[in-house]
Amino acid sequence: MAGALLALIRRVNRAIALAVGIMLLAAAGFVLVDIVLRRLGASLGGSDEISGYAMALATSWGMGFALVELGHVRIEVLRSRAPGGLRAALDLVAMLALAAAVTLVALRGWPVLARSLANGSRANTPLETPLALVQGPWLAGWAWFALTAWGTLLAAAWLLLRGKRAAAEAAIGTGSAEDAPR
Image (cartoon, rainbow, N blue to C red):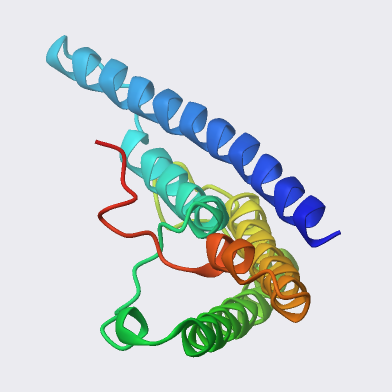
Protein backbone atom coordinates (compact mmCIF):
# COMPACT_ATOMS: atom_id res chain seq x y z
CA MET A 1 0.00 0.00 0.00
CA ALA A 2 2.69 2.51 1.01
CA GLY A 3 4.82 1.54 -1.96
CA ALA A 4 1.89 2.03 -4.33
CA LEU A 5 1.16 5.46 -2.83
CA LEU A 6 4.80 6.51 -3.19
CA ALA A 7 4.88 5.24 -6.78
CA LEU A 8 1.71 7.19 -7.61
CA ILE A 9 3.05 10.36 -6.01
CA ARG A 10 6.33 9.98 -7.92
CA ARG A 11 4.53 9.37 -11.27
CA VAL A 12 2.26 12.37 -10.86
CA ASN A 13 5.14 14.61 -9.83
CA ARG A 14 7.21 13.50 -12.81
CA ALA A 15 4.31 14.38 -15.14
CA ILE A 16 3.98 17.76 -13.41
CA ALA A 17 7.74 18.33 -13.76
CA LEU A 18 7.49 17.64 -17.48
CA ALA A 19 4.60 20.09 -17.85
CA VAL A 20 6.48 22.71 -15.84
CA GLY A 21 9.56 22.20 -18.00
CA ILE A 22 7.51 22.73 -21.15
CA MET A 23 6.02 25.89 -19.61
CA LEU A 24 9.49 27.21 -18.81
CA LEU A 25 10.72 26.45 -22.33
CA ALA A 26 7.71 28.31 -23.74
CA ALA A 27 8.42 31.28 -21.46
CA ALA A 28 12.07 31.28 -22.52
CA GLY A 29 11.00 31.14 -26.18
CA PHE A 30 8.63 34.06 -25.63
CA VAL A 31 11.41 36.10 -24.02
CA LEU A 32 13.80 35.20 -26.85
CA VAL A 33 11.29 36.30 -29.50
CA ASP A 34 10.69 39.53 -27.57
CA ILE A 35 14.44 40.22 -27.40
CA VAL A 36 14.85 39.66 -31.14
CA LEU A 37 11.87 41.90 -31.87
CA ARG A 38 13.32 44.64 -29.64
CA ARG A 39 16.49 44.57 -31.73
CA LEU A 40 14.25 45.14 -34.75
CA GLY A 41 12.42 48.07 -33.13
CA ALA A 42 9.27 46.23 -31.99
CA SER A 43 8.23 44.26 -28.91
CA LEU A 44 5.61 41.82 -27.75
CA GLY A 45 5.65 43.51 -24.34
CA GLY A 46 5.23 41.86 -20.97
CA SER A 47 7.87 39.20 -21.40
CA ASP A 48 9.42 40.07 -18.04
CA GLU A 49 6.05 39.85 -16.31
CA ILE A 50 5.06 36.59 -17.98
CA SER A 51 8.43 34.98 -17.29
CA GLY A 52 8.12 36.03 -13.64
CA TYR A 53 4.75 34.33 -13.44
CA ALA A 54 6.21 31.23 -15.09
CA MET A 55 8.99 31.13 -12.49
CA ALA A 56 6.51 31.47 -9.61
CA LEU A 57 4.41 28.61 -10.99
CA ALA A 58 7.48 26.48 -11.70
CA THR A 59 8.65 26.96 -8.14
CA SER A 60 5.39 26.04 -6.44
CA TRP A 61 4.66 23.07 -8.71
CA GLY A 62 8.28 21.90 -8.86
CA MET A 63 8.69 21.55 -5.10
CA GLY A 64 6.78 18.25 -4.97
CA PHE A 65 9.04 16.80 -7.65
CA ALA A 66 12.13 17.94 -5.74
CA LEU A 67 10.73 16.27 -2.64
CA VAL A 68 10.14 12.86 -4.20
CA GLU A 69 13.53 12.99 -5.91
CA LEU A 70 15.20 13.88 -2.56
CA GLY A 71 16.33 17.18 -4.02
CA HIS A 72 15.59 19.37 -1.00
CA VAL A 73 18.63 20.42 0.99
CA ARG A 74 18.95 19.31 4.58
CA ILE A 75 21.82 19.84 6.96
CA GLU A 76 22.63 16.29 7.91
CA VAL A 77 25.70 16.49 10.13
CA LEU A 78 23.81 14.73 12.95
CA ARG A 79 21.77 12.45 10.70
CA SER A 80 24.77 11.07 8.84
CA ARG A 81 26.39 9.95 12.09
CA ALA A 82 23.22 8.53 13.67
CA PRO A 83 22.40 4.82 13.84
CA GLY A 84 19.59 3.55 11.58
CA GLY A 85 16.71 3.92 14.04
CA LEU A 86 17.63 7.46 15.05
CA ARG A 87 18.27 8.37 11.42
CA ALA A 88 14.76 7.18 10.53
CA ALA A 89 13.30 9.23 13.40
CA LEU A 90 15.19 12.32 12.26
CA ASP A 91 13.90 11.78 8.71
CA LEU A 92 10.33 11.59 10.01
CA VAL A 93 10.75 14.74 12.10
CA ALA A 94 12.23 16.59 9.10
CA MET A 95 9.38 15.44 6.85
CA LEU A 96 6.79 16.38 9.47
CA ALA A 97 8.31 19.85 9.80
CA LEU A 98 8.34 20.27 6.02
CA ALA A 99 4.74 19.06 5.62
CA ALA A 100 3.55 21.37 8.39
CA ALA A 101 5.42 24.39 7.01
CA VAL A 102 4.19 23.84 3.46
CA THR A 103 0.63 23.35 4.70
CA LEU A 104 0.90 26.68 6.51
CA VAL A 105 2.10 28.38 3.32
CA ALA A 106 -0.82 26.90 1.38
CA LEU A 107 -3.34 27.88 4.04
CA ARG A 108 -1.96 31.41 4.27
CA GLY A 109 -2.03 31.73 0.50
CA TRP A 110 -5.79 31.23 0.30
CA PRO A 111 -6.77 34.61 1.86
CA VAL A 112 -4.49 36.36 -0.64
CA LEU A 113 -6.21 34.63 -3.56
CA ALA A 114 -9.67 35.18 -2.05
CA ARG A 115 -8.97 38.92 -1.69
CA SER A 116 -7.76 39.13 -5.28
CA LEU A 117 -10.91 37.38 -6.45
CA ALA A 118 -13.20 39.56 -4.33
CA ASN A 119 -11.53 42.80 -5.42
CA GLY A 120 -10.89 41.83 -9.03
CA SER A 121 -7.25 42.76 -8.37
CA ARG A 122 -4.96 43.29 -11.32
CA ALA A 123 -1.18 43.57 -11.57
CA ASN A 124 0.20 47.09 -11.48
CA THR A 125 1.89 46.52 -14.84
CA PRO A 126 1.17 47.37 -18.48
CA LEU A 127 -0.51 43.96 -18.97
CA GLU A 128 -2.79 44.49 -15.95
CA THR A 129 -2.98 40.74 -15.48
CA PRO A 130 -5.84 39.60 -13.22
CA LEU A 131 -3.87 38.41 -10.19
CA ALA A 132 -6.19 35.47 -9.51
CA LEU A 133 -5.16 33.95 -12.86
CA VAL A 134 -1.65 33.58 -11.51
CA GLN A 135 -2.33 33.22 -7.81
CA GLY A 136 -4.80 30.34 -8.32
CA PRO A 137 -2.35 27.99 -10.08
CA TRP A 138 0.45 29.19 -7.78
CA LEU A 139 -1.60 28.30 -4.70
CA ALA A 140 -2.64 24.99 -6.25
CA GLY A 141 1.06 24.18 -6.63
CA TRP A 142 1.66 24.81 -2.93
CA ALA A 143 -1.40 22.73 -2.03
CA TRP A 144 -0.08 19.90 -4.21
CA PHE A 145 3.31 20.18 -2.53
CA ALA A 146 1.59 19.91 0.87
CA LEU A 147 -0.38 16.83 -0.26
CA THR A 148 2.80 15.31 -1.63
CA ALA A 149 4.63 15.94 1.64
CA TRP A 150 1.84 14.48 3.80
CA GLY A 151 1.37 11.48 1.52
CA THR A 152 5.09 10.78 1.50
CA LEU A 153 5.30 11.19 5.28
CA LEU A 154 2.40 8.80 5.89
CA ALA A 155 3.76 6.21 3.47
CA ALA A 156 7.23 6.39 5.04
CA ALA A 157 5.80 6.11 8.55
CA TRP A 158 3.80 3.07 7.43
CA LEU A 159 6.94 1.51 5.96
CA LEU A 160 8.85 2.12 9.19
CA LEU A 161 6.06 0.56 11.24
CA ARG A 162 6.27 -2.50 8.99
CA GLY A 163 10.05 -2.71 9.53
CA LYS A 164 11.01 -1.57 6.03
CA ARG A 165 13.58 1.04 7.03
CA ALA A 166 15.47 0.99 3.70
CA ALA A 167 12.28 1.68 1.73
CA ALA A 168 11.34 4.50 4.12
CA GLU A 169 14.80 6.02 3.82
CA ALA A 170 14.55 5.83 0.04
CA ALA A 171 11.32 7.84 0.29
CA ILE A 172 12.26 10.51 2.87
CA GLY A 173 15.99 10.22 3.44
CA THR A 174 18.49 12.55 1.86
CA GLY A 175 20.14 12.33 -1.48
CA SER A 176 23.88 12.30 -1.07
CA ALA A 177 26.75 13.17 -3.34
CA GLU A 178 27.48 9.48 -3.64
CA ASP A 179 23.94 8.85 -4.98
CA ALA A 180 24.13 11.59 -7.62
CA PRO A 181 24.53 10.48 -11.24
CA ARG A 182 28.02 10.95 -12.59
